[in-house]
Image 1 (cartoon, one colour):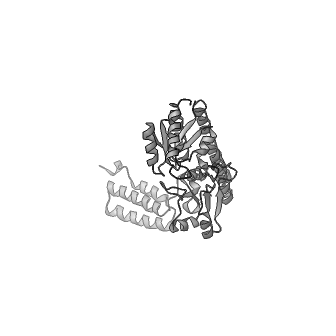
Image 2 (cartoon, rainbow, N blue to C red; image 1 turned 60 degrees about the vertical axis):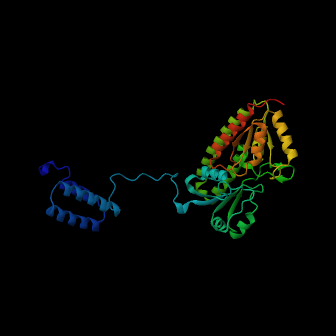
Image 3 (tube, rainbow, N blue to C red; image 1 turned 90 degrees about the horizontal axis):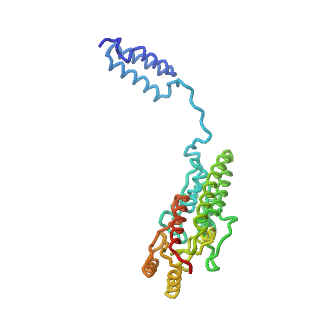
Length: 340
């Protein structure tokens, strides 16, 4: 094969060399190219030289682009060092933070999967990590009983209490029910507080956070409307749960939640008997349990009722999808009930 048929010619090498901006590197590559071309002529040598020229120059940052670089989008993700470090008590809150902050936040979930938030206490190593956060998004409503300890280790930590402005429910007229996030309508309030907290720390991106907030609020509203339609025609709006986490959910859709646990304690035989009688009267065939609690009592009830157990996780990380799943399962459980 003659030189005229080679796909890589010396003029290709000089063209590549012409794209190198740095004079020092251009001089070195030029010398190397002449030396190799005299010493090892041929197709493969020319090809290797071309690759060598381009690769060496690219690694040194000295190739001039043939086209001007595209402008950096305002919505490009921030570098890791520029992201706001956010800690959130539970995974659903963390999901809301990510929905608003997207790639401009690094989020740490305090209560790990499977842990029970009512009794969880952060370890010393986790407290150190939390003290380095820029923003803490707390659920509020009494869930974070250890919050004072965290504030003592980081007095400058900005804290967002997402429960402010939410009408709280009392369990048995005593303790506040902290499961406010299990209401899509409450979540809309929480998301607004999250947006305000991020905007205060990063005012230059306020419009970006507001846009993301509004996008998420539309999704919350759409799902709320969907669930409202699902429960509007049920004849017996009653469902049986092991742990009373779904009180705010029940309030939103005018449902009655019957819990097995009373004040976070296993029920006595008299109460269990009453629940079983009510379940039979209402033809309830489903008992909802949570992965954070031992289901032993629920299993006993389910056997007595010939009912099935369905797990609903209040702390599942994909908030919207989890609420859609919970709504679907609770509504489905009511289709087989009969008026009492």
